[in-house]
Length: 358
Image (cartoon, rainbow, N blue to C red; front, side):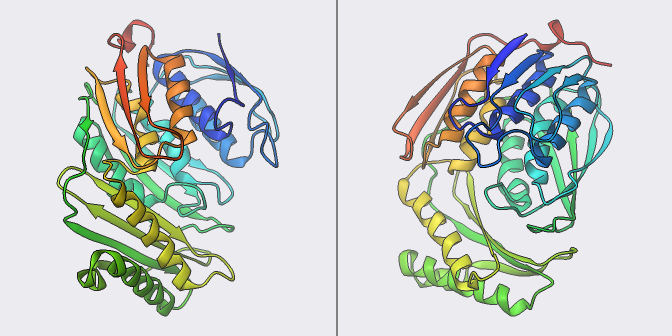
């Protein structure tokens, strides 16, 4: 059984989610200790338990330690299966993080899968559903994986109550990715949304984002294609999502509203992140860089990409992925700065040799 130190690197839920995902994919049992040890509330929270239960369901796994606050967990998968699944986090925990636990193994399941997830769709410090739909899924398609997403109900922190649906089609193989430069910025688009609040707030968010972009990129950005959206859902919240399209790849950035936070601040935050990324001259935004790691570790051949910021999430995801899969990798650059990552699977991962499917 693989032993994993949950306090390594980023030391948060990312280690657990990637471990669950790759255990389901490879059939490797693991035991993890020190889960979220340095967090204000250590151990498993509702969102992490939802990921555990979801992984347990698709891999018919035996699980020990799946309790609120538990700092250790033992997970033994038995047989991976696709199909229809529905999971409710029960809080405003991020549906996108739970979904990202399930995507890699379900891409290698015996049949297509349809996953319905209830919880938070736009949650602090988590990828928004818009990001997965408009940035993550298109790049997955480029390497050979098909993910289709829809938002039925929006769920904002702290109430949650959102719902998304994902269709995941089995993939035969993944193609390596080489992305050194992003190419010329061709288009800026996005949406500014409010849930159960005046649409004028979304308009103010959009205006501030356009102004911040125009101050750096020129007056053409004052009419950037940012749609206004009334986001149906049980709670109140706001967000602004920006996407930049270049000749080779898209990048995305989301800023969320909060009680007492001005709409202008939301728009400016998203624009500033956008501008910082494109000023770096790197291909992948920081979020896409770490999210792609498990997929590129399964490619036929070497992958290489530049990113506008080497994050601890990226470094941690590389480390834990190499525990489960035959992977060597090299990172050029310092944490917090732009850099390059090269990933080389040392041999083809022939999953059928080590894993049984129903």
